[in-house]
Image (cartoon, rainbow, N blue to C red; front, top):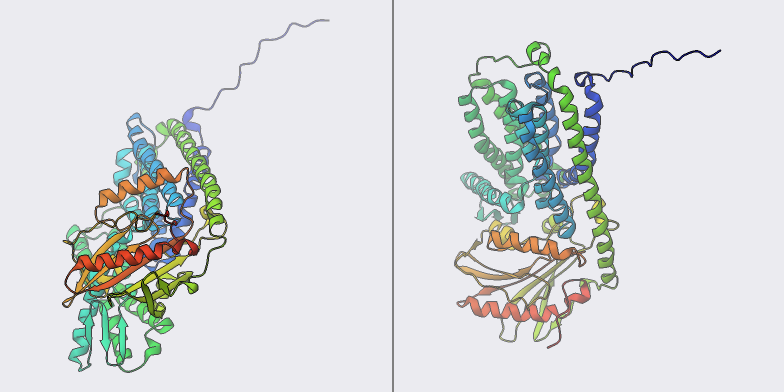
Length: 557
């Protein structure tokens, strides 16, 4: 017996867009953001761990996340068509992170400049996501946590040194005046204190820059969480610089007392670090005292999940569209992560090719005593402080005598390439640097009116640089190469050159080793004659340096 089929049952109704649980689209977005940002986060962690100037970076995201959580109910979550403008900072941030990744793979692995660009890019990505999810109103209400993230971005050394060197010298000057007032014989050259028993250098740890960066972050957090008035907030921010400098001057002064009394074991190592912690605690206590003295603003209610029902009620209407936008943003982030992996693989292959050239490299301990007509008359090593700062794999420091009796100091520092794949290195390697940092720290002033170009044929494959420094009636000419494009006089010229180097590196092996070659000589009257003598020595060195894994062998004439 046949039975006629009954009416077909209707298909199950899809849930309305507003019924999509937030976890369904937040999880892919969070996963995409984590996969995309992981190389940058690993690089930033290496900077925070190895460079004390940025050790506060670990706490910045935690504070920013807590502040954003407290403000979550004040943001009108949900997507509106006008929120699409948030895609601009999102895409710009993704491109900036990829450019920074290319930069570090092509030129300097885990360099601070690359981490600076990548850090800014990640902040832009977070701003773009907040804009898409909460509109421009949400970005304004999350202004503090979003802006606070900028404090976790490492600042390049050419900007950092503009603050570091003056603070070094200011701390040294204050401590010198106080020590002299106590009857202790001390003189100062730049940031170096000279006692009858020896010299005490005021390094970056005593310069105030580390405390200044941390204290700036602490003061901003105090302003936000204490709800200070605008006038009180400005006063607290203005107090950060003198508090940082004065507390670090106390640290230098106490170290000077120890040194003058012969307690040298207290001027370095654990005791010196403990002294730094105590002076930092003094700085924090000073800021806390200022906060208690400043008149707080009238208590303004902070939107929370408990006191903002209106904000919660307005969340539902845009959640369906917000899910679509979140999936699109996750797709962009996953695509960018895939592009980053392709960059890694490409440069890993080129890097392996570069390492083959360094297999039979000689040690700098065997560097020749005679270089053409130049004869080495003295040989020395880096000081303990310099070695700890630079940590080179190999070094050669010597004084060479020219046929006319001129003495020239030649320094060659070499850093071995990291073992394994450089794109997987989470730590920050020590870096070559130009004399623009160390010479001013020792009291030398650069003469910027002396502009001489270094001929490109002197040191093949390298961009040479020339500096003329003066101090107390003396002049010193310095010619140097750093193994990477750096220290150019014109900032635009440097940027264009680095972009050209990145493009060229796509087909040729990237730099697998880092090095610094510096030639310096005192100037009597004519800087040009000193410059010519330095070039002659550089040409002689260029013939043998490739045997030590540095530079390219010049072509035979």
